[in-house]
Image (cartoon, rainbow, N blue to C red; front, side, top):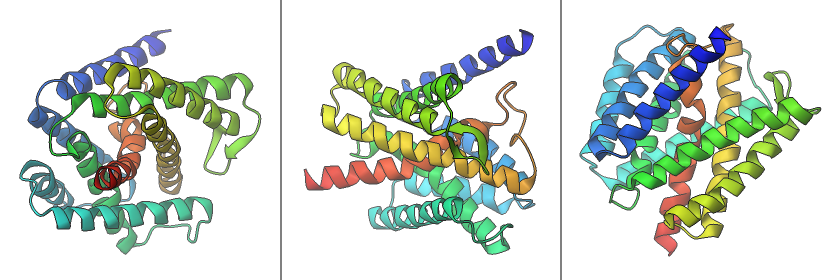
Amino acid sequence: MREVIIRALSGLLYVAFLLLAIFSLENIYLILILIFGILCLYEFLRLINVKSIVPYFLLVLATLVFCYFKWYNQVTLVFLSLTIMTNLYLIKNLIRPSEKYITIAQKYIYLLFYIIGGFVFTILLPSYQGEYTSYLVASVFALIWINDTFAFIVGKSIGKHKLLERISPKKTVEGFIGGLVFSCIASVFIYKFTELLSIQLWITVAIVTSVFGTLGDLIQSQLKRQAGVKDSGQLMPGHGGIYDRLDSIIFASPFIYLFLIVLDYVS
């Protein structure tokens, strides 16, 4: 019982800090996500056994260039393309692993595009049109949480078919479908509350968020298995590390950002 209470309190504290930052100012949101990024990067570097301070400077530099000063839109698109390509390779490696261990080159590519790129586009997400829109990023986080919650509930209740047993034995196909369905239902309510996008586009965002959020969780599980650890850290009691909490959003954000800027371009 005590563990359940601690888990609930740490989870509520995390959500409260995040929502407070989202609904305050853009720069406060940027600073909080950057702090989360530094903590996540620390956990990731320990996971892949890299001891260097250079990645921290790269994270801060990328955040300043792409998110604060917002220089060079074309360079941002190149960075997005490289991030998407890296994430697609991680998906390929999840389905058909080509190696058991991560090479030195892969480690640095992953930390630059998968981790740093993931945080950059998580920060850029609410201002993809130029103006900061708090309800957009709050809705995406809500869809991530709803997907995770109902994937767990449905999987625990009726899950029989394993989704990817060699990576995450507890995840089931039924749980994945349950998370996806409830995310789509939630997107209808988000549409009625925000009206930022059409109902069809909100449902599409929910599908993208659910699918790529789940893949992000599985990829993190694969990396932890390769490192031989259960959790990426102990920063959040009952939840593991900050990387354990943000694995879905940092993986899904580049894909959501790509969808939104393409939509904005063609509309």
